[in-house]
Amino acid sequence: MMLKMITRNQVKLILSLQKRKVREENSLFVIEGDKLVREYILAGNRVVLLAGKPEWLDGEPEAVITGAEEVVSVSYEELRRISSLRTPHNVLAVAPMRREIFSEEILHGRLIPALEYVQDPGNLGTIIRIAAWFGMGDILCSTDCVDFYNPKVIQATMGAFMHVNVWYRPLDSLLGNAVSEGIPVYGTTMDGTPVYECDLSREGIILFGNESKGISETLLRHVTRRITIPGPLRPLAGLESLNVSMAAAIVCSEFARRRT
Image (cartoon, rainbow, N blue to C red; front, side, top):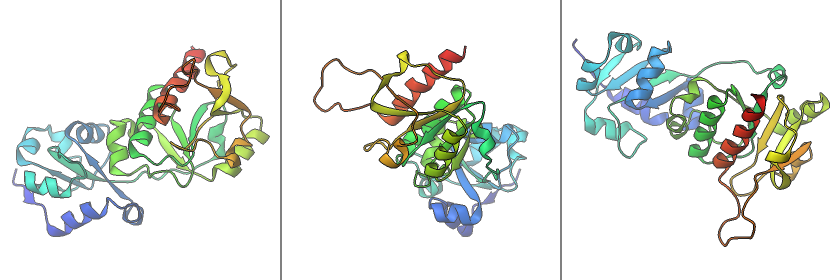
């Protein structure tokens, strides 16, 4: 197969997609990594551009190559230039964003993590991976959370982004509506009841706050049950709380355990 070389315009597009505004204007995002790109395409997802080293492209099954609208060859130096990673992989892809329609009906009959002002891409990506593992197919995010399509978020999900919908909504009104309909809102706080001692339902919203500030007073007023993760018996210098993604793993694990 004769491969075309990547063009300047394609390089420019890929680099520009590191910015949220450009991603939203073009409805495109970047996926990096041999395994991630391969699994994304083999799962039946379309990519508009596949840019890989010639030896990688030559070794891939036909289903991967034909799953792209356009395939181009790149050198390692070109990959270094266009990659958002310190050490690039052998391939990256440009894919169209999913377009789903949000409905508050998704709040009923299931458990949904909700995140307020989570800023670290690694944290959001890890929480998406946690949600997928425990069968939680939706996550609510405040509008000021880090972007789901940030390349570092996509990388941190390790493929789980394919299985979870992330919705950016005004949480103040949304949580208020949920409470008015009898849906419990669990808030993770330092002064809550240990999660292992709480009655946990199969339906509800599990709210996690900002990495350093926790849950704001604005959203705390909607919390119907405050829960916490038991910590050390005595204060330890420099240890105030768990990382938000670590907390999400522990809390979601306990909710999942109660479902079985």
